[in-house]
Image (tube, rainbow, N blue to C red):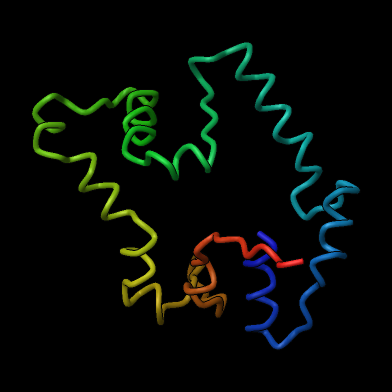
Length: 139
């Protein structure tokens, strides 16, 4: 979220918050959306009580085998792929269609703007796309 808000601030010609300050606020549970860890913990506890109603997905695992976790997700939602769909490669095709590479290259996501209701917020869609790769500093 930090990167999205930073890009948005820059697009509005306002000074974005520095990463170290944002990190401190996050650690102090100061957020526009409330304390993050309390939020996650609430869902984790609910998952323990109702495992059939909550599913946690981890980015690293999904990134390693996206098709497998996509199949788990649709099964969890009650809409598993049929054997025929699996044989035709439907899950793989959907994952490819929803991939970062595909979505970030759509014209609407390169030049379009985010709309809410009838208004135009003026937020360019491209700010939502970030590779998610972390650069490790050399010491």
